[in-house]
Length: 514
Ligand code: AHR
Image (cartoon, rainbow, N blue to C red; front, side, top):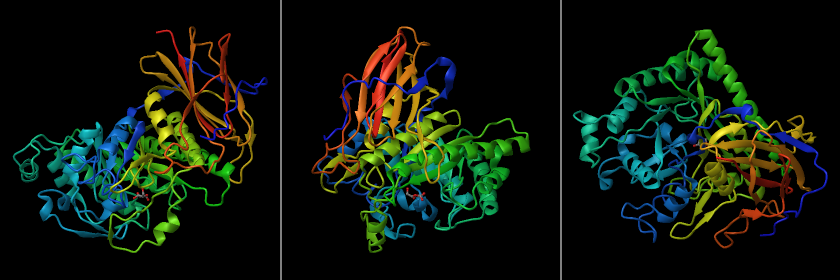
């Protein structure tokens, strides 16, 4: 790889941070590393499901995809949409495959064969070791379809829908715990788009009745589909006025892009994610105070990523194809940096953000890319997600980084270094995740570790490339891959010195006395 990783530690250290147990933000919910799969493009057909593929098992699940998803160890996967769910009849996707109807999917102007549905999804989740997170259709449907789907999935037996599941081969209930009350209902593009008032009432009734079928489920109500929506944050306030006692989470969605080729601005956009989270928290707490409610509302950031490369190609796709290539962003090194900054933002807000789904998992704006009938590749964005999922579990520590900043057209004082610490669940290790937004120079960072007596140096993994537009392809799958670097760490008198290469994603691991 054409890595620009500098050797050695620059003499001057002007960026400083502290890591201490007292600076705990909160315990990270493992579901921070969740993902999302929609009936969209080649996410399912040609992605995770491809009967006949050389790696497919008897169920048609691609083994190469299963292996990469297992590596990511994503604990929860949202399904079946996305915009798709707002026109979906879940009944079309269960029962004998040969009898399932082909339908027009109006969300993405494609043909839906329905050969993959709820039962196949749950089976796939079991195969990869993840939990399903199910969205219901509150666009064209409502309370009745919602309660029936909960009965189908979670009721043991002896009723119409639970017995139908058993007849379809699933004696044990699917036990789906987390349910989304529709998708992006604030957006004019949504099938069955609603005002906050209309949606709030519908979500309230759906939630109430779904819980009557299964009181153990957790519910996510739709917040705004982005911070830029003109209805934000009044949408949240109105929706929560209706649903506060009935739901556990409110959703947030955000996608960023570098449409103007302005890399410093692109890298700064995670500051918008910080602000969005904090504004939604404030709105939730306002409604909580107004209602004098005991419960603190948690957040489900159930769609986030970089999404812009494929926009033009998608406009040129003819309608009504089955599994066309849609939203197939090929991710660059700089996209991986933005994903890294967004992961840091999410970890920093783990006290309120409990469920997070990178959108999406395979082929559609995804860290994993496959060729139908062909190979598989880890996109650049795969690696920050892999590292965060692997080492970012435990207790998040605010690092109080003080460093140089730059001015941006939207954000004031963008810090060159974005960083957060994580103390492992078993307290045997500290991990620092850091992005250096400085495009030209390595930056030295000094971290005060004196609170951790007996800390010893672990390793320093870096994702960087001389060309910020470098990508991984089927032909060149290892163009952008992480590297364990040497001579970039020094620990002296409880102070850790680390050199963060220009434009890099960094994972620094520190061993602790057990
Ligand atoms: O993830 C792609 C799309 O982005 C989803 O279908 C929708 O919810 C969002 O607008």
